[in-house]
Length: 211
Image (cartoon, rainbow, N blue to C red):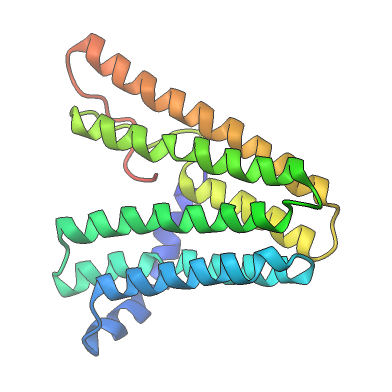
C-alpha cells in the first residue's frame, strides 16, 4: 500500500548515507544499530504504557525509517553483499518480535484482548516474509501484496501513537486484529502467486520489493 513512498523516503536518507560512507561506517553496522534502537524502544518504552507508548512509537518509527540508510550506504560504497541482505532481513524479524512483544507486555494485564492481538499480529506476520522467501527459492517473485511489512508497521505505529496521546485502547486493539487479517490476506496472495506460476510453468512478477 505504501510502496510508492519508498523511493521518496530513500531520497531523504541519501545525504546521511553518503556522509556515513565518507567517514567509513559500514552498512551492516547501521543495520545493527537501527535494530538495537528499535529493540530498546520497544522493550523499555512501550511496556510502560501511557505517554511512553507515544514516545516509543516515535522512536521506533525513526529507527524503522533509518533502516533505508544501510541499503543506500551499500550502493554508494559498493559493499552490497548477500550477507548484508541476509542480515537486514534477519534484523527485520528481530525488530518485529520486539515491537509486538512490547505491545503485548504493555497490555498483558490491562487489556488481554489487545495483548493477544499483538501476539497474533506477530505470529501471522511472520508468514508474509516466509512466503516471499520460499517463493523466491522456487523462482517466483511474490514480494508484493495487500499489506507489506512497512504498511503493517506504519498502521500499528499510528494506532500506538494515538493511544499514547490519549485515544481509547480499543483503537489499538481493533488495529492489531485488522493487521492479523491483512497479514493473512497477503500470505494468501503470495501463495496464489506461486500457484499461478506453477500452473503456468513459469515465474510470475508479483512485485518489485517489500516484505
